[in-house]
Length: 402
Ligand code: ACO
Image (cartoon, rainbow, N blue to C red; front, side, top):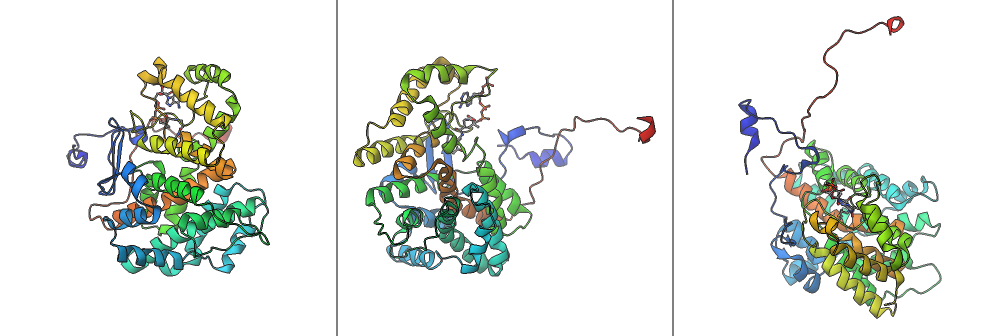
């Protein structure tokens, strides 16, 4: 690793790296990825072990504070998060300002940004206590906000958090309970949701996390930074891929149509890409995709819908692509989004909720990375340079002479 800044200060070097394919923007102790080996570690712990043995709030503690909690610390953390799940009644008005059929991601971007107008007693980034309160508030309130965005988008009344439930169960309750009808959270679905959240919790300097860090580098408050992260996540090349992937699998429809779509993905003239395939860092199987595939099998099996046509198309598409020279030579493997949509659909979520669920899961990663950045003495305002390719200096031409 070369510290280019020293060479730049001597006037020796100027790097050009669109998309930051080979530029580290920070040092971090949070998440490690080995893209060639297909390895992902949170604070040194393998994602496969965490997915099997841990749960989402324990992962949140690990990402935020760097160590697995003791039983006592975990209990204290869970109770602090649980205490903050409600949002102020007045905040309901934020939601009501949106068109009734708005995409939940549009609502979330706006409402989370507006939290800085509401919770301004935790926006002083120089006060460690306020930083801590902002972190807990965001982790606690994000499921409530995502669920409310969903309820609003389908014209149903908001459902308040039920704090006797665990984090993922509470989220399912807020999404699927309706007044005057009893809703019992299915433990299979709650565990599957918890696992989806764990798998998405952090992923080092991906586009949305880099956006959060860049916004935060100017001293912006954490709510504004996370709103910027949500906006970035929405794109189909990033968090929006899970919605796009399921829509693609549905469009393919039956296994006999797969070759037609594979041919399109390989055609340079066609902008179509196989959604859920490829990754900037993984040049091997995304380890999260392996866990997600196993989870999809389990959940659909337990729900008695193993013969799900979308899952059949997904499995066959994966098999064909992994044997195809184009995908093999470009090291294009299924990523985490390839199977998550199938599980979410089986749970009853519409595709428009897939990316909001990614956003609420990634909130802890964004906040952990933001906290790390704020306390890093090396941190400077993020200010990329450019390679100017426009016109050289020229004389202004009066309008009548143009
Ligand atoms: N289908 C077909 N071809 C692909 C795909 C794909 N899904 N992904 C990459 N390629 C091809 C590109 O066309 C390019 O070909 P070329 O060398 O002939 O020009 C080559 O593989 C390299 O791809 P790049 O786009 O340069 O790789 P990059 O690192 O910039 O992009 C990305 C990674 C954005 C994830 C890309 O693979 C993609 O768009 N995939 C589909 C969307 C998706 O699933 N996104 C989710 C990412 S994971 C996440 O956010 C949680």
